[in-house]
Image (tube, rainbow, N blue to C red; front, top):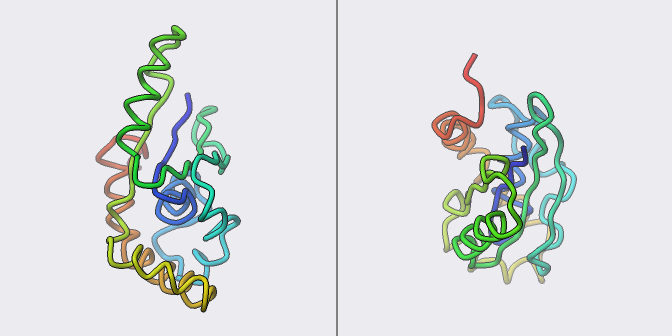
Length: 147
């Protein structure tokens, strides 16, 4: 099975959710741990790039994907494609985690051009505050096994 987390860039909220799932982050991490994740804040102008993050459980591959503002369209299209090429849709799970970063922070993305480290640190701090919500989403979606 493959799990793909989607957000506008594939390198912020989806990256945190994926790393939380595979165990590279936990609820006790700090914003610097998030900031230091491989790919954090990279490829922000290249939606459509899949990033392999790691494996979860017994062979489940975990990815992120930047979708721009078209996450729902991508999800629908991906599931339709799975049907067309006759693959079991149960082998693919797509989760839009865009909601974990509010629109006002995306609008501040212009700061990235002027103060690149400031914007990434701001997003890392915001996502640190959202870790419990992201973890609850993983558990409620039954992606993450509850001990």
